[in-house]
Image 1: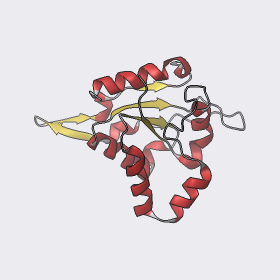
Image 2 (image 1 turned 90 degrees about the horizontal axis):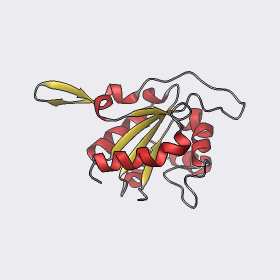
Image 3 (image 1 turned 30 degrees about the vertical axis):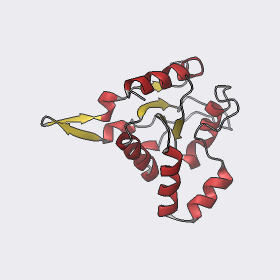
Image 4 (image 1 turned 60 degrees about the vertical axis):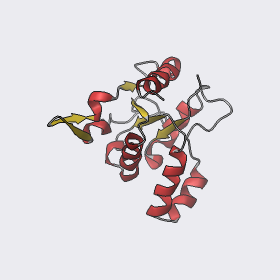
Length: 161
């Protein structure tokens, strides 16, 4: 089943890598939560409130959030916001390391920290980290091109969406 999916990634550093995933042939005829540079620059110029409003609008009706994890993803304010909002909406979530995806120069980058390690909720007096709940894959090593649809579907089913 097709799922409306939001993709979270560090635009400045990882848009090329995210574009490789978008152009992998898995998202024919749809934007699938990706934003183009011109639109992002316009939203960004309007400030924090406009950015969080745009994120909220993009998350409306989604069932899954995919966090594309690059070298600095876990440190980004808006990615942290997207993860929090996705959790509040009970979206299924998963992470995908993209450090092995080559950029436009043909280079790879350092493996980033799993951003799900930074979020937790208390359950019966114990901290339960999002990294205990949501899986993280590697686009190259885990054959994302063949498996992304399965990963998204599993996340949606787990979230009952």
